Amino acid sequence: MRFSSQIPLFRSISRISIAGIGSFARFRSQNRFFIGCFRERSSLGSQNRNGSRTCSLSRRSIMCADLVDNGLLPFAAAAHDIFNMRTNRRSMVTWDSDDDGEITNNFDLFYSTSKGKNISDKDICSAYIEMLCSSGNLAEAVSLLRHLQNRQTHVSLNVYNILLSLAAEANNFSLFSKIFKYLLTSKVPPDFTSYCNVAKAFQKVDDSELLLKFIRDVSEITCDREPTVVNRIVFAVGDSGQIDKSLMIFEELKKIQFDVNVVTFNTVLGILGRSGQVDRMLSEFTQMKDLGYSPDLVTYNTVINCLRRMGKFGLCKDFAREMFEKGINMDLRTYTAVIDGLGRAGHVEEALNMFSEMKKSQQPSIYIYRALISDLKRAGKFELALNLSEEMNSTSSKLIGPKDFKPKQKVKMS
Image (cartoon, rainbow, N blue to C red; front, top):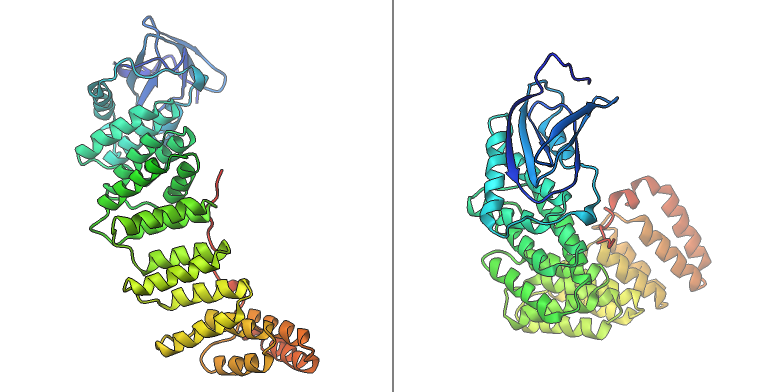
């Protein structure tokens, strides 16, 4: 859009004092306001070909101005463009004053300018914090976040995740810890991205005591809830390859007598099994029962599958028997692991008998057929393998296959 010299560009102008973000700011016509930076004698520059204008301003201030309503872009787009300025982030400086009052006063002025424009309080707060982050003022954004929480004003989960990611990238674990604890005391629960950020932050910290203090703080905040948060931290850290740190967290939780649950043990058993630490996995399984936690179907499936991958086929059968004695019915995953374990151990007749038993209660999967066929060929039972292959092909449309299994999300480290 091109500006007309016949229409007023601004309705009113106010100034907020902050540290300079750059000598030039760029804006587009909005129905809300303009924020630029700053020379005291500011003069609006010429119109560019693309309809935008530049201004040469400077004196550490933000110029806020209501624009003539034109309905061109929503507030979210305006908020994004406001701080999308031509500047080198390395040259950015922080606020002139360390006083939180200046931060909140600046926000209050921004808020009063934005209020009444059919924009929710959450969107206004979220946009302002995102603008602080994009301008390199992470510490100020966190300080404002605390202020907003004290006022019972909430921001979106996306804002928390942005702050967590930036703090992790900056290797500022102290700030990261504050943000995550603010998130836990907010009205929004952490999501997968939040826990990925925890794993990233842990990866850059070698101080064990610092990490354990974080865990103690988190456990204290969540002590009146189910241990979902600590369970997911244990999983995210372990799944990102930081097995020692994940196990260290688990030991700390037991040490401080935090109310872990069966899910906590299942998570740790899986981490130990996947990392090949079979003896410790079995030790934790025993300790789990000694502490009064009853293993469930997930527990046995985790242990049996880990034992199968490690070639401990005899133990797979022993745990399956223990399940039966405890009245826990095997599911398809259990049957697949035990049948394949028996077949690999050379007990193909027993594997086939269990396969027949399984079909009475479970819909077979293509994987169990393939495993059995491979085991039969390995044992020299080629005719049985051929018959089973024909059976698989004739019922292929009814078999459980890849489409029936959800892919596992893995914590990715950038």
